[in-house]
Image (tube, rainbow, N blue to C red):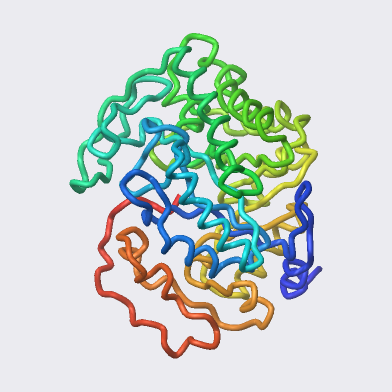
Length: 383
């Protein structure tokens, strides 16, 4: 049996992703951090944050909304206006100067939104509200019943995703990741409890796949499939989603999209022992990115989890919180050095440099700030 430390070496080996040459197999997973301006424009602080983490094989930047109604929480990034594109250009320029590469995740929140945040009533496949409160600029508020999307709304949203992908390339990104996971709009179309439609977008698994397929195809047609990834989270119940037929949905989705020549398929909470993982791997002809569940924040645990996924034929490994707390994560893995721990969940989402750009690199570990005491934060999740 291969020892996990051997897989740490494998993680540091160069790889390719479509036209991109990656210096290592470690991807920084998208992490919502709520540091944008209220209109979704990235800030100079965000440029610093991402440039600090440029040693990742690829950075997948946090979710950006393709249109105003897709906004989820306050200070979430967007990519549908010229001002937002210019803000993202400052970020990608900083990362490129530091030697890095970036994709941008495109995410529409669907029912995960609120008029107090976006000024608009959220839309969704069916008028089924989020079964919990939602964080807004005024704090937690009851969710609202979303407006059921018409077929015209669906066509407009598909076009918005394609336009956002073009904007992302104009902003300097190498490509985009379509977000069909974690209970947001595309995932809501996949899930039986949030998709109660009786038209061509609801009912059977094949019809529930249709919206994700159409969005992905439109984005691929706009910027080239080799610049497009797709993120899914089989069986994930976050944001009140209950898929039904999980073992049928995802192999079918992989089969529908496998011939497009996409850059990758990204599995959240990847479990190599789950039958759906093997079925997706067997049916997906391209690069498979696996985002593991880590039992602790350590190099040894990264090695253990990566070993299991690589042995199950994952191609690249995406990590979230280890990159959040360790701007030099790749170097720490190379040296087998201790990892910074995420200091305080409160600091993930409140804005400012604390808990964002002030995590120390190896040569500055002694200066790491002490943990803040405000650990009861219940704001939005890292998704």
